[in-house]
Length: 102
Image 1 (cartoon, rainbow, N blue to C red):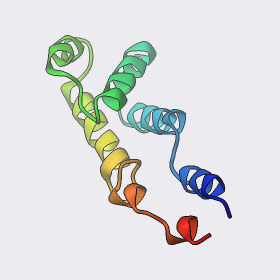
Image 2: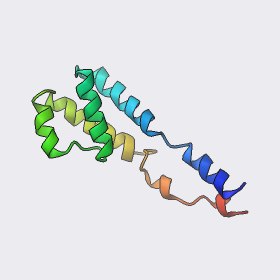
Image 3: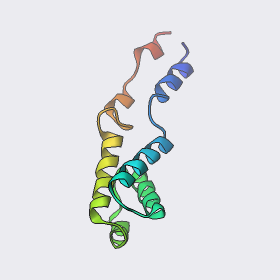
């Protein structure tokens, strides 16, 4: 197995941005009633800022969306990205011995 093939096979195990986006959208939508365009903007902000809504934008969104919904969004996204088997879990950065064996 070449290095390029090994890196491709390890990369394909991790969820893509669109997978993370749709997972977060579905989870928050199931728990809270948030308008679609607001939820979409919040999810994009949260994914771009490593599971946090910037404080400057948070005050604006808290006037339109329940504070509990924003908190849940951040917690769910943090668990998805940094939790066990998350997108940024420590396993992502490990070297795999089979990639370097040949």
